[in-house]
Length: 304
Image 1 (cartoon, helix red, strand yellow):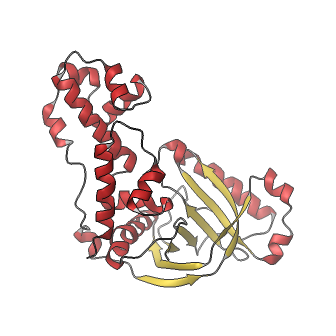
Image 2 (spheres, one colour):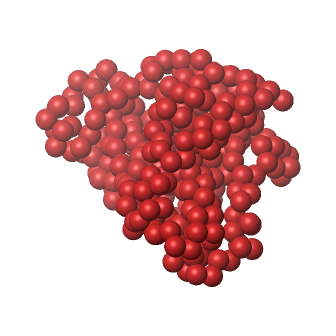
Image 3 (cartoon, helix red, strand yellow):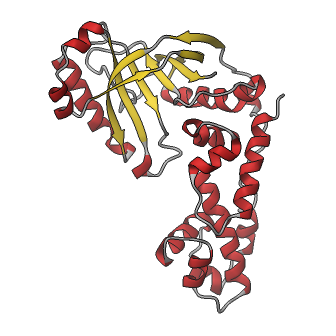
């Protein structure tokens, strides 16, 4: 197995250990790993089963616990400033979330057993045996440039159904049914990795020359629709048939196992999906409220 990915992320972990008292920038961490920022968070989670934000939060909380446990007089304000929290309240919330005990409680009566259990958050770099037994087939394909009309969703994943409903209605108004337009999702982040305010996904429909010509720019703007395109280039593609939980597992396999084993270079464009089978009464829906028992999805990972 190639060790390009684990070596790249070891550089990131080493940097974080040495600069824990400074705010971190995701773009800078991606540069350290020499990985496009559009894939950095998903790769980190696939490898270590913890988000980069949660990992940094845990590192800071562990150091704060040392200060609280062995320096009984140190103030929470001092610790918050030392570890580059936004303020004391941010420190209290973060510490409680990571350690399971408030900093005030830990300072008075630390639960050292729980503390030591928290010090090994990263799972092995090796894939789970159960996942290895069900490796999806991966093809290398050439994807042609595809124009899209998309509705962007930024924010709480719980509000995604409302965005989906607006997009479905817009597609119906312009007669862009599943038979006249392909359905795509551009995945900038996932609900598992992102804070509610940072979650991002585009819900899109393909456009040809004719459909583009009849879209009024003013109508697009008033409908919160934007024109984008998926660029031409090579992609690793997985044909998936199953529920949404399986999609997440297939994406994890691509990032964690396939990329590492094949030592490929990722292009700076997010992973995207094409939904092949969509009922007329729910077209445009990337995450149905009630999961379908079986869906047909093409998962594309852009590579050089």
